[in-house]
Structures are given as structure tokens and as C-alpha cells.
Length: 192
Image (cartoon, rainbow, N blue to C red):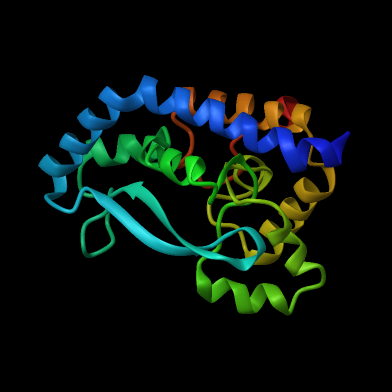
């Protein structure tokens, strides 16, 4: 059952929710783009090369929330980050098949070499990277690569429809609380 989900249904699920998400969030995304433009000027989108499924490189999209000096300078940009709305342009990455709603966060190229030296590190690339994952929910805001790998491999080993739904609902709860910028785990032990 798990193999069937991973091979067929997960992609169909991503496409259906991604198209619905773009329809629902088109106007709010235009408003957010305008807010970023007013706060930081152009460009509105942050684009960065990331490593995806099977090691393929792609360009991830996000709303820009930091100045050129690497600081969050406006309350609007801080709000975008705290509720993870800066990630909404990744709906395009999902529709293109570069990402999934749930999976390990995509790596930057510099992390790939370190990952290759870790036991089972390449196993992380056997699923599409996602908007939400176990490491983001249960790990620190910026976990060490070894900690991320532990959570990511747990997801790879247990990938299922019910696990994906659980991660999505927990991610939604974190978004509604505006807790994505919290330094430690986003959920308390009782919520796990």
C-alpha cells in the first residue's frame, strides 16, 4: 500500500491540492507580493538553487523577506515568516513536480556533499522535497544536518497517506499559531 501511495497517489494529491491552493491563494499572494514590494522593493521573489528528488537541481521560489544584509526589516516580512506564508510561491514548484506538500526540505547544493558522507544520506533524495516535514515540526528552527537527516529518514521509511495528513494538519496548527519562527520544536510533547 505504501509503495502505491508513494508512486502514484502522492503526486495526484499534490497536483489536486496545489491547483486548489493556487486558486484560493491567488489574490492573497498578489497582496503579499505587493506588501513585500512596499517593504523591500524589487525583486519580490527569492529564488535559490536547491537539490530535489534523486539529486536533480531546481529553483525554489519564496517571497523575499530579508534585506540584502540578511535581516528581516519589517513587521510585515516577519509576519510572513512566522506564519510561513513566504513559502506560498512553492505551490508552483509543487505543480511542476519539483516538490511535494510533505517531505524533507530541499537541500542547498553545499549540503549535498556532506549528506553523501553520512550513512543512508542518499536515502533522503528518494522522495520529493516538501513544504512541510517531520524535521520542521519536531526539530529546532535550524537543526544540524545530522538531526535533519534523522527526521527525514524516519519520514522516508514511514511515508504514507496518514502520515502526510498528520504532518499537514500539524503544520496548519503551527501556522495558525504563527510559531514557525520559534527556535525550538514547534509542538509540545503532548501534541506529538
